[in-house]
Length: 636
Image (cartoon, rainbow, N blue to C red):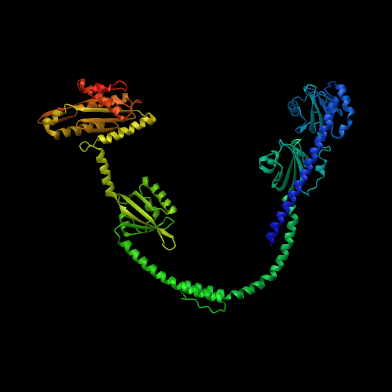
């Protein structure tokens, strides 16, 4: 109740104070608007009397005749079209002849030619903070002839007299700002004519400076929380502000709540002991029930025997005894099922594991422990590090995803056993659900050793793209790498060169020495070519005695040097049969990818044509065909 009283009281105080401040700010703003408009009207009447006259003595005489203006202003000045003060009243030494053409208010009046209230400034003659309420002087043709201004001092004068009379308690006060962020009026005189610092720290004030009228609660200059109300004086570009510290406004409410709390404390000291005795008597059967439930939980009692006249507690005791009997029966069934499951898992030849939803593997069967060559007591953090580094992060991320979403975990990865053997494992884990409630217990997974299958698949992939005689790429494997290099060329303009050649004088080796001798020659040639090219290059035997070399990231000049080196080393390869030494040479065609190529077939055609040209030149030669130099019809 104290808390509720405090909250309700704060809300009422907030509404009342904000409404009062908003009302007062509106009244002050309306009064200032009226005072500014009245002063502008007085200056307009003086403007009509002066007309477009530029005679300083006559203008001075007219000002003295309108001495009643001094009830509105601390002084009146008149300037010509160049901004020079030609008359003032009352006269102040140094003001007549003062050039104000560079001042903010003169530039604004000359540009807008409508009444204007200036920004606060320090008077050049009086050296006091001032604002100037001014109207433009225009001739009959509407030409600008100067200004008539009424000077209002900010450190005295009647414009802000009402503000000085406002009382908002000890800490409350009023202030007036310009829309540009300067202080026109403030109880602390040193703030007058000073800019507002860190205005972004005061959001309500910042909104008011942008043209907003309203109220709010927030911190202000001294860092205290205050009620704030703002109202706009549109004719002058000013903002009226009223402030009241929240702590000061809430002080009466705090005193009331404090007195009320002492009353409640006294009542509580009387009532609490009586309530305590009454509750102890009422709850004694409940305490006995609690004690017996605790004894049942510790297996010191098999059931609850409660002697009480409270029908509700007797029903609770009967229900508890029935639930306890069911629990014991379920526990017995669960233990039997756990024993059965342990037997199944332990005897299964397949690797199996169980995990909770924290991601911790709580059980591994003997088959899995044997497969991984780890002990049952090895920490999970330790054997996780034996997963291949390239597979580990992906496996862990997918594991966390499955735990979060409840989806099956399916992954193949490599595991590094402690004896140095690398296993390929196929893992499939699934969430186990309770059919009646739909709750999940964890994940149960099966692990298969697929190392032999993966090795067989790798061998099949290798055999599908390699020549069994030489170990080089076959036509299929070479074409795939050629397509990849051509795709890189199209994307990044990476240069690549292509070499095609077949062997000269190879047929006599097969005819005279048999295919075994020819195969030996092919293996030796494949070996020297592989030694001669770079590790990044691709060498292929395309069939018979036809070979191809792909040189990625290689210019045509570099490719020509490599081609000459291959021609030389191949010519040095020999085989011997029946005391006869056999040599072979090669006829090689060299080309590169071109922007005009539609496919790799264009490059293959150029290289093949260059190879034919090398044969036509007498063999044992290298011919380079630049794109655009070769006519495919020359082959026919």
